[in-house]
Image 1: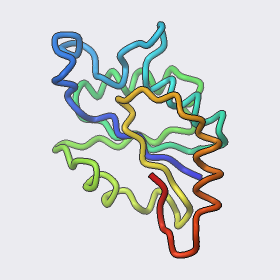
Image 2: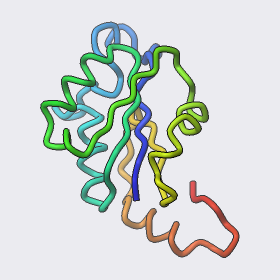
Image 3: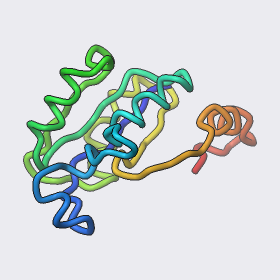
Length: 131
């Protein structure tokens, strides 16, 4: 399973904190939120990752290139924000026809991702997605 992590937004609701740091890099207990997602998704057996960038993209690029996940992450810069559906549609080929996850990487979530994946795989026939 692969994952697209949406990390391009401005984080306006967290201003002034996000005046100098993208929301996906805001630290939670000292760890950038994007790092938490990459760690938890990897633990759940998910990779590779596509991360979209826009606002303060150079900081996201720097974080990824200096992380243990640098070889698992493909960065895609959006000159104009595409929105959730737009980013998904523009990058559908990333999934290579496999199941995938779409993650808002600027949200904090403690759900058990392995349970989520198991539920997805045991969904009823004809059900295309799990939310």
